[in-house]
Length: 505
Image (tube, rainbow, N blue to C red; front, side):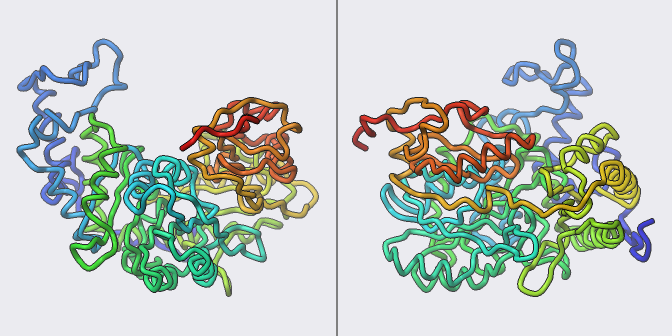
């Protein structure tokens, strides 16, 4: 039972099954999507535009149902209705920004757009090493040279928190020509850092602080949650609307405080960076779902986020009673998103991949599992019933696979130190060749290789392939983990910069 944590959420009774909480009055994109789909469904509208399915399901079935374009869909082809601009204006107002764009390419697109906006080719940028691979590829696109800084690791679990302001201050002192600071907060595992302190350090050096807050769209909407990074002084924030919020996959929001309001970022460069990496055929459906999620937070964020925190708190309390099972929580010196559920399995002897397989078989896929760690996403869409059924299956799986307790092993994503030999951009465009894995040691990697999840690089273009990094990746694969983005995911070969070296860049 989830005792002592009653679900006191009170929402209005639905008046319209297509808009159960009455959000369309505050969500112009949602309103336009509902209007368009109602018209096509009733046969009052027959578009002679793309997409080619034309809202009909006779050919490929329901897979295309609800797919409405932005152009000649939720707005006219000439954007005369201005619904996207109005929706983005409302989101900027909600989060306290003066610049906002909705992305249909996820936080990946947002990170790369901001990378294009903060500097010029050849400039250094201070970057957290545990940021998502999308940031590193953004550096390749922008031609920026990373100055890697590492986050603090929790001494009890080895999981990452935030980058210490002192670490960033030292990096900026060593690189006075740096153009920005880019960090991820919270981390993939929910560890939170001192964003206010980071903003102070960055601004003292005259550079903007950019926060990849992909996992933090719910922050700032309940007193028990950390504040949103913009409220802590960040200059730009990239966040996903499809993680804890109920938007379509790929929905993301990029927010910034620009020179228009005394900030450090140029709004025109932000626009150009966003458009340079954005599709010219955005789906209005994803955009409308982002607008709906924003309106939901504006109207009911305190209630919904309060329920989310209570649910996760109750889950942690129940799981803490399972022998050997630890649940990541805040403690002195380490702060965790109270809505994040991270399970530490080493004390149970159960292997995370085995537990994950049982959960999938029972109908409960989880966000991430490796040998010692399991992350289950609890979101605004969950309630006591969904969580209770998941917990029953989880506890049964742990007991089924219980064994002798073992020491936890840190993920290579958090522990391998990079050895930089050339810029990521130079290595990305260099002539390259595949060599046998062991022969790659000492050579410069031409590709990005990481365990996924979490999608944090262990090797990046321009870095020396070390024995440590290769061994860590091989150990991950041998243990059943996925190696992502490598040309040869077996690691029998590695793509390295050719001996002739890179061409001029």
